[in-house]
Length: 346
Image 1 (cartoon, helix red, strand yellow):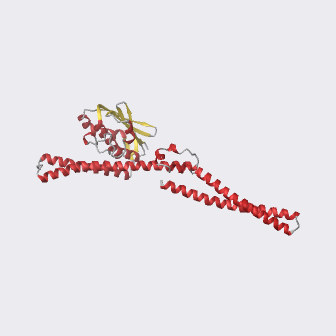
Image 2: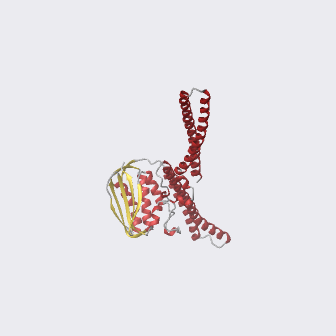
Image 3: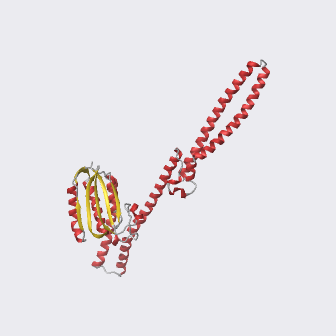
């Protein structure tokens, strides 16, 4: 809001100064020109110097009054239109509810466009602030659970409530591994955000078959049958990055699957190579669609580790696909969900 008020205030002050200066110059030039021309014409028909002087004084007086009236009128008219022109910016500062959507700005002139841009930036900043607050909350929750467990068992060992046996050691080890995994995942996301993605020739058929082979035993153990339709294509891309995306999507299938069949399909579509993974999964509400790829987002709000991870897998996948100049999306048809991502062929 302070930015909008500052812009609006500066624009009004500059416009006032500029228009006052222009109005003053115009009035002086026009007034002096009219006066001198009128005196010249009067002198042609009046040889008396006294009458000429009286006429000059009279016309200067009337021109002064007219100049004052014209100057005041110009300032008032300018203020009226300045406020009207800057109304889109003023509307943004009335209350916070105007930041709820772009429909609050109806002006189509240059100031209206500026107001829309400011409104768009404000909405983005508010959304980023909410995401940062939610991310900090989620990080605190993810860290608090294992740290609380560790602290409780350590105090129990100190007070003699627990004995230092194998079961206690396994619990402590599991919580430590949870912390290490969380930190590693955060570091992995940060690394992909900052990494230089080098491109080489990638045989998609061979690469996909390798990743499928890597996960075949895990799918069999989960009782899932994988159906594959792969279209061969040579890409100029980053094989390691694509492998990571596939692994994240496969891990998501294994975590949330609710059926016994998974279909992996790849094909060329225009200038892109499309890979889609479809399966029956636990239901995802419509309001969750836009947040699925946000970091630390979990469909299950309790963030129980038995029903999901830390919420970083899809965020990592989206970051990688974006770095590869592709797109990733989620599509639901009934109880069938499909994660689909595209990679430029060259």
